[in-house]
Image (cartoon, rainbow, N blue to C red; front, side):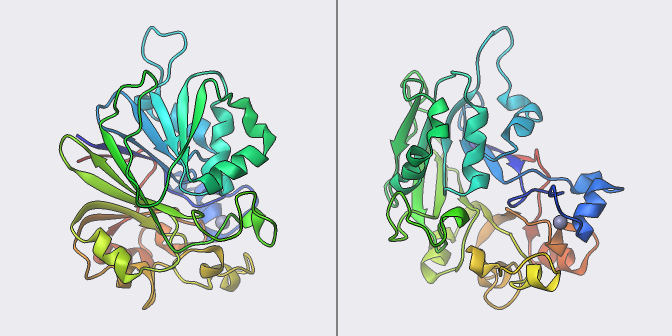
Length: 309
Ligand SMILES: [Zn+2]
């Protein structure tokens, strides 16, 4: 069985964001705490006992408290069911949570050499000693089976693939420690249970739904997909910022080139938006945008949602 828990569904900053007074953030702080959401990450497992995180968000500590599947096993003084972390990019909301895993438990970090170069260039990540925490390079289009800390197989097969996107925001206009050629900055993942063949896709950042991506996703049982903004100029219109969605490497939900329209004819059993920014009106139950998304078959998950395939 392939198990997945949505640890967090929000984009960078979360809902509410510390310095934001937009409609959604105000409601989330006030009468609608159900709108609160932590920054995007999922946990996956083939056996229900050993888990892999896809990205380690700055909210990881809170996410682990909220997720019984990831608590230390009863009776153990020091233990974690987390066997590894797979990084799909080097953004703050994907890597900062690693710093909350520094107390000596063994696990492995799987990431593209580009992202590993960022970790290496920032010595604060040395709190994760290479003795306990191996850093394993992964490549696009090369599947791998992550190993458990004792070396035995996890039962999961991970296939990373390149997705249209951008490099980490904080490196814009700067020399990337892993080189500026754009390779490896944004990965999607297919995660498959080797025993059953059941699989899901994780694509939390995507700037373009290409024909190649459409054919890859055809027939998928479950897809988590980039839901950052409803419309490309949403932050500008709301007075929240100067960046467009695409300027940040994120496709919008709506519009002729948006995720809903682009994937409408692709056969996917279950489609779930992830990495949803607090400016996105589809977060509001009862909004027109939410209705459009749901009528098109999309789900906007609450943190803690568990799915078994
Ligand atoms: Zn806000």
